View 1: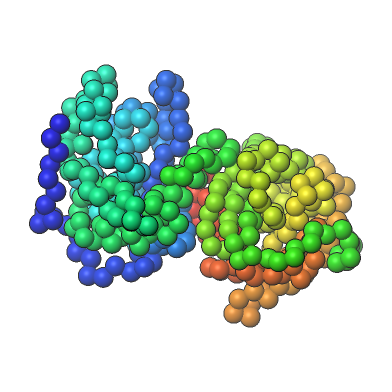
View 2 (view 1 turned 45 degrees about the horizontal axis):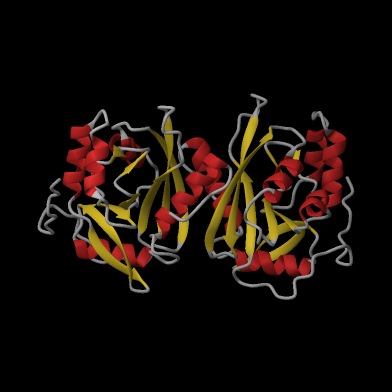
Length: 208
Length: 208
């Protein structure tokens, strides 16, 4: 599978300055039953940089569906929190293979999107897994549009990877670094993960 | 109604030192339908002092019921988070009149309990409201055991009130102050409130 090279010259939001307390919407999904064919909980937290929580949003998406982009865009656009400057998502999708089209999410919300992953995705394994899904072409297009994951050296010389849209790599890297105050994972995503797993299971688990 | 005077000489947990990052479990309820007679969501957040989130717990209690003490004790005792040092609750009860017996909660969990309220409760109005409840005697005993609310001057010369069990006033005051990093309300309760309302309504509302 070929990923698009992300050019910083593409349409991006200009950040003239990036404040330590920039409002970031971090989103993660809760645990779900892969075989029940139902819905998964999505939790969005509005975090001030890597410092403190401003608000919480909630929506649901279909397991192995195609509605993540639409549901996240809707959650953002109808929210009273109008000062969100950037969207961060835990991986490129939620609820199994319900991938986000980050280009479309950027276009619909006007907000840059950063997808954060701990390890470089195994694209060969993903290609194989996609063969068994109902929406292969859509998922392939989401992966292609997201561009090749790029390394961000984060804390203690360790790194994570990001895919992004609507922002330059340099700005995305700055925002990831400033918000990773407690672990390698930016605080808005770490906290969204704890909330989503805690609400679904009764007790949170793992890091993000 | 008479409230018991809280004597610091009563059984208390001794805090030899109180760390800035002491693990506090803050609990608040989500919005619920008073007339549907159902359950209300309780969200517990494990917060490191007033600084950052360590974990999230969830349970439910009956609207206008009597199971808050038991449900909170159960949530705490079965949790993998074994380093919680103190429980903070938003007001003396949840889900309408489902009051917490903070003396029993202390005895069952071994953890001191602090109930935080923004304003001095109007006990005459509460007495009147209790007349129409199914569990008047139980609620009266919870209020009596909680003791008279005491003022804590918190930030900017403003104050809140606390009721407490299993801890001296001086230690309770220190913990309330150190954890109120963002507002008059200690961070563990402010954040539990945002999560509970966000999950139930789709978007958080108000402060705690």
